[in-house]
View 1 (spheres, rainbow, N blue to C red):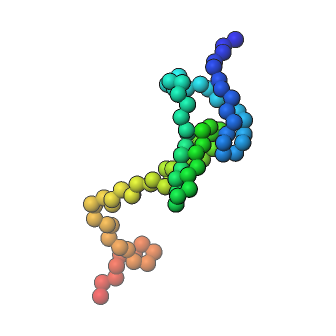
View 2 (cartoon, rainbow, N blue to C red; view 1 turned 90 degrees about the vertical axis):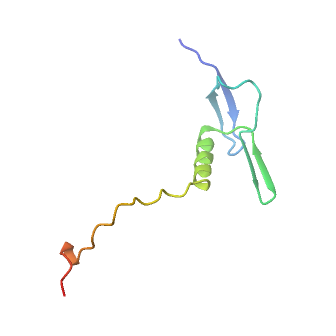
View 3 (cartoon, rainbow, N blue to C red; view 1 turned 90 degrees about the horizontal axis):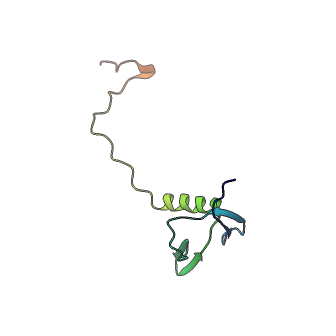
Length: 90
């Protein structure tokens, strides 16, 4: 039977308790997973469950969304009349 090291995490955001795999890149120093400072209020989360971590990641991506790419330089297709018919000559 294979074994892998896991840790038990109690989520600071929702209170859920779950086991998560140990990050081999971690050097043993426990850092805060999320620090939010907004209008003078600061909230710190040391541990997040996978669901809350995913939600926070999505919030962060939506807050830091980059402007959309500029439109291509190709000319716009000619406008067509009603039901796709060509423009009527006057």
